[in-house]
Amino acid sequence: MHKTAPRRLAATMRQLRVFEAVARLSSFSRAAAELHLAQPTVSVQVKQLSDVIGVPLFEQIGRQIHLTDAGRMLQATSAELFDAWTRLEMQVADLKGLKQGRLRIAVVTTAKYVVPRLLGAFCEAHAGVEVSLEVGNRSAILERLARNADDLTVMGVPPRGMDIVRHPFAENPLVVVAPRGHALAGARRVSLARLAGERFLLREKGSGTRLAVDRFLRERNLQLDMRMEIGSNEAIKQAVAGGLGLSILSQHALGPDEAPRSLVALNVEGFPIHRHWYIVHPTGKRLSVVAQAFFAFLKAQGPGIELPALKGYSAAGGTVQRA
Ligand code: PGA
Image (cartoon, rainbow, N blue to C red; front, side):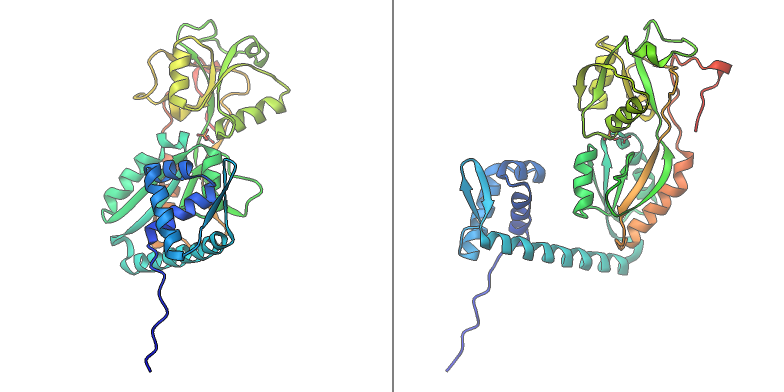
């Protein structure tokens, strides 16, 4: 008699990636947005996968979707598969050294003024390296760090409660930004109390910039008249230039190319708030050869990164203080 081999479950890696995102985000539409796919594509992939498995993976209760028992089992198995696959990719990349390999970097929104340029120089030196760069605000990037989704992360406010390695590599000061022609532009030293009389447009909660600003204000027992919360440095600069209020932004966001000419930095007591950019990764993470090389590259290049000049900033003694 002749035994038939057990039927194999013919799931594809792509179906599993789509399933993982839907399961993690508990939403077909959010998974579609994260994966840059159309929602029907996501639904079809999940449907095909559940046909392969032979039982439903999700159940819908009201408007919410929940994993079934089979879905939870598949979620655990796919996590193991992805880990094994990532280890394999890393081992193969290490065999090839820096000639080929992948580098997955995640940076907070404001770091986009710093990191892509450095990546450019790094890629020029290592032409075979394929880079993916994820940009999001601090909370989005922290969520990626918690699930070990990237090789390296660049952020201004590393988390306190997570087991991570953090290495400061460049300055990241925050300055008060005003429209050119503002009554306080060019003043030698504006008192903090004077800011209380101004309207402010601040970055959204969840951003590193906002966290640093809130900490600074709390320590000084100061409240600002916050008129608007805006989730983009670029939009804030336009709104400030348009006279909607003042803001507190990273000096890196005031680069010559991006900043409207109509912005100036104010010399306010306690500012710039001196901070740093950090390279971060989970403790115990084994960095690939490419990630180690980029880490070393950031450490070497960091001190040489120039801050954009502060327009309209009048410092006592004539110089802008740096950390
Ligand atoms: P953000 O982070 O872009 O989330 O504000 C920047 C920072 O921490 O400086």
